[in-house]
Image (cartoon, rainbow, N blue to C red; front, side, top):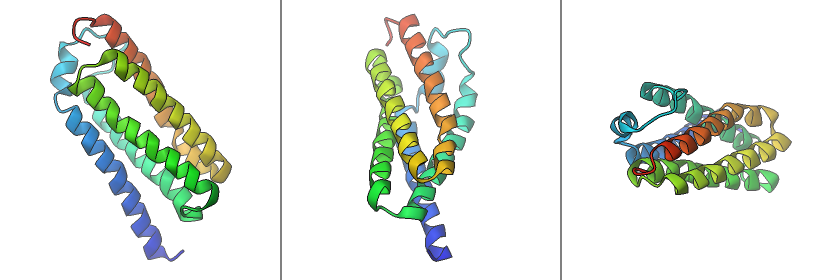
Length: 162
């Protein structure tokens, strides 16, 4: 594949990833204030940590998808893997709205479990095609695992709000 097409592809995957981040961010515009008002478990991270972590994760998700696309395009097993990736991106984007915009603690918890499953499926499908692409998603899986526990704990600690 020509280098300019590779660079264009990388930029496209980064753009997609950060559009998803932006739409999710729009849904969580009030997150810093809302997060401060919630009862939090003692192990909850400070609000300022979420932005840098998600920036790194969205970048790794984009590079991961780009590695699959660069090697295989949208053909064969890569097509299915990238389709599952698109589903997990959609679920990722939706979670912020469920939790921070619509205050749906139980539904956001169920949804983050579905997100977790699609991340695992994406990793498994990527692993068969490009191990580096799969490995790049492991921090994302770890963070969403942590976020699911945090979601559950906050929901339980704030029954009148979530």
